[in-house]
Image (cartoon, rainbow, N blue to C red):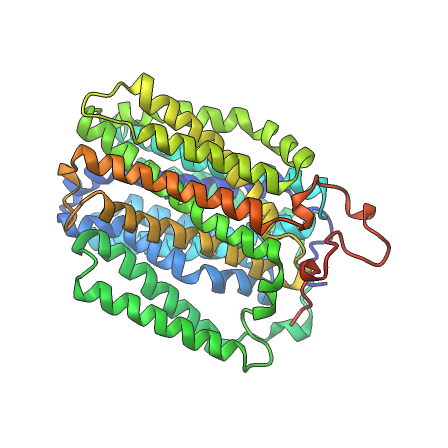
Length: 486
């Protein structure tokens, strides 16, 4: 079976790599001011420090996930980590804006290889049931801790060292991880039949994802009616339709459309999209509210996120146990309720709201919800997937979350009344609208969890695969049977 690592992969190593990626995704935002002052970025150019990463990460995630199934996940993991580490070094030493943007683009490309490889190695190495729930729990907890802690770490590093530290901090960690991965990870055993890559499909879907990522990135700066935005989003839609047509006509499609008959996978990806939107919108607008309305410094803003990160740390083990006891469906429904409550509370902000009475409890509720999402959504999105398609499932999961981050943030910015990148003058009603938007997305999570996961194996308490009836997989209904390798 493809993806057999010859035993359980080293979970700590894989999760440390995921932590570095999640941390890097969030840590840069607080350092943007220092980057602009030192390197001379224009206001419109500064967005590409984040946008270049998002463009290449979102654009190549699906291809990166499938490539792991084809060329081997260990090989992709080690190569991606090496490139990511080198790109971090280049970015940390950058002396011109274009060098930093290029380094961020290369980081995004490398992360698109590493992130789905991490999830696929974990999913393939731990059988469905309690073992996978626990492994995915650690993976999700580390991801959410990195995302939540990134803002805090970015503020401290920027304030007391330099913005360069947020890039160079990856260097020692990356070197150690590459050395350990080369020794500890067992090479995949890839079937010859699976070594053919759907090149036309790969080109079309990567181009579509890049077009969508570009359009969404530019929309927050130029507005939805700008020509580049309309052209990019239209091109993305056309390319995506062409990709779907190609997938029905080739013998070895990049994304066998039959995989979406797995309702657990489909619902898990929908939840990943919505929860990615909640995380991106809430983090973005909480940061701006603290700095613009409450006039917090970078370091104080970072410290203000520590309680949320601490909640993620404390809640991780209970969430894992809750998922084992209640099943993914009920746990995700509860997590959506936490997110909705957090968004609704933050939507009560005023020009003189108290951090302790509004922002802190709202952030804590979001932290609880984020912990559930990061831990349990990965379980649903990889449930019932055969080994040869585990990388594909991981790429789909990460792509869904990244699309949610980009699209929902662009919509949140539009709802907040931010025009042409004028983020320095958001009206208080704009903050309220953005937080109500996160609450609405969270209600969507509740609906998808309660209805979409009904009748699936992840709707019930996790159980060892051996408990399934002989000759059957843990997923019991025909619609949820593992999808055959294409």
